[in-house]
Length: 341
Image (tube, rainbow, N blue to C red; front, side, top):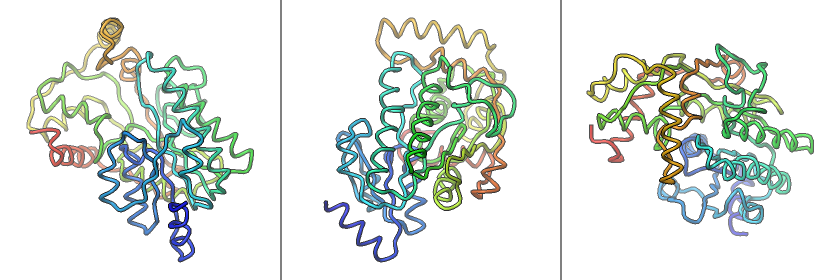
């Protein structure tokens, strides 16, 4: 294949080669940027209907395919690639998408693992999530029980099962490392915390969640992925937290940066959970995904912090001030015309 031949020649010349899934997404495009900054030759998988303008602008090799299609993965993934970065996932918090989410997060990861093994990839870096640890409270580290195994939240359960697919690949000889980011903020976000930022900019924020979490900078998350190729232990998890704070603080900082008035108090947990149930009932009639789901409300009412000591020690991971993360995200949204404030 032309893709494989081009990358093989680059590898022969001493350039390391990477294959990235989810390269058109928030975390994926940041991983691509970090790889390019370090001189890697990058092949990015993309679906047929994906917008690949940002990838084209970076000059990466494009490979059409879908992680749910094993055949397309086999055709797209170059032989002997130095590292596969699996960042593609379904992030939905709506139960009506559970079946689709399982196909993407579990079946898709199984396919990536098998394709990486068949192509002789030297390392797999799997983007998991703190969600595999489930609805816990307080501060956790990598030794905490992974309650995602039995979680009623589809995202938590499928991300746990995706890790199991990676571990099955390890048992069959594929070297792999697993990274578990927390709440990620930064440039190129359109659907995560950027949704809340845009609501603030439009004076459309109905209320502030009462919970708290660890906020991670997407650039540092991406750097940790690249560092994990050489420094990450096979089969090891690395939690990527950062700044521990309340959602209220996050909203207030974003409001100040945007010049918008925001609520001074949080919603009562029972109100947010009730709102999620009502919105889900309405969505069952309209078929449109609600802004707040029961699953999302359950997460937003918890206080979950992650200890990133292991990632800092092994991968050189760093925390970034919350205001810096939010300013980066807001500046990028403005540049793209996604907010006017």
